Image 1 (tube, rainbow, N blue to C red):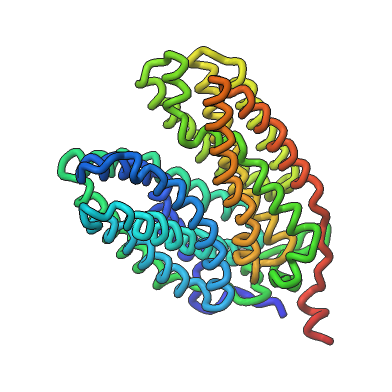
Image 2: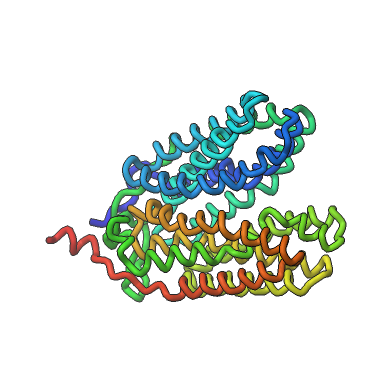
Length: 415
C-alpha cells in the first residue's frame, strides 16, 4: 500500500507554497489594527464594533473544522482556493460596509474573515503535513512559525498604509493581495496519496514506521476514543494565560505605570517568542516526542504566570511575554502532531477542527471571567490563579493521551 513520491511531485515546493499561503493567512493575528481606524474613519462609537474581533475568534475554529472536512473530501488545492476567496472577500467587503450599518461587520469581518481564514489555515497546514510523515514536527513548526510570525511585519505594514491613505484602502489592498497570492500558490498544492512514503526514507530501528503507513480513523470513530477527549481538554484548558492576556498586553503594562513604548516592545517580544518556540520546539517533537515538548510548553507558561503575578519591573514582564509566546505558541505546533499520531493523516484536519471547539468555548468564557474578576477586585490575581490551574489541567490531559492502536495499511488491504 505504501506509495513512493509521485512523478513530478516536489514536496519541498508544496511546503514553500503552503508557507506563503500561511504568511498571508497570518494577517488574522493583526486584524486588531483595523478596528480602531474603522471606528475613526466612519465616526462610529468604538463600542459598537468592539466585539467583532472576539466574534471572529469564535468563527475561526468553525472554519478550521470545515477546512479539515473539505481537505478530506476535495483535497488540498480546492480547500486553499475556497479559503482564499472567502477570506479575501471578507477583507474587501469590510471596506465597503455602509456608514449606517456597522453591524454588517459581524458578517464581513467576523464571519467571512474568521471562516475563510480558518479554512485556509487548517486545510493548508494538514495538506503540507501529509507530505512530511517523516518530519511532521519540523513541517508543523515551519507552518506555525510563518503563520504566527507574519503579524510582526503585517501589523506595522497595515498600520503604515492606513496612516498614508485610509483604512478602506488598506483593507481592499490586503484582501486583493492575499486572495491573489493564495490562489496562485494554491494552484500548485495537492494532497499526498494514501500511504505516502518519502523517497529515500529509511525506517527507524524501532520498526514503528510512519504514521502514513497505518489506517486513519474518521471523526465518527475518533470522538468515541479517550484520545480525542483528552486532546480537546488539552486544547481548551492550556491556552488560559494567552486568553487572559491577548487583548491586554499593552494595557497590563501601562496599568503598572510602565511607559507605552515598553508596552509596545512587549508585544514584539511576545511575537519573537512565538516564532522561536513554534519553530524550535516544533522540530524538537521529531526528536523527543510531543509529550516532552508539551511539558516544556507548560513550564514556560508557568514561568510566565509567576512573572505576571509577582513581577512589577519592565524586565520581568518582558520575560513573561517571551515565555508566553514560546510556551503557548509552541502548542500550535504540538497539537497537529498529536492529532496525526493518534488518528492518522487522512482525517486529521477534520478531527483537529472538532477538537478546536474546546478552545472556541474558552475564547468566550475566560476573557469574560477575567474581566469580571478584575472589575470586582482591581487585580489580576484571581484570573492568574485560574490560569495556573487550567493550564496544568491542560498539560495533564496531554500527558494522559494513550497510544491508539491502528492497523497497518498492508494488513487492511490483505483482508
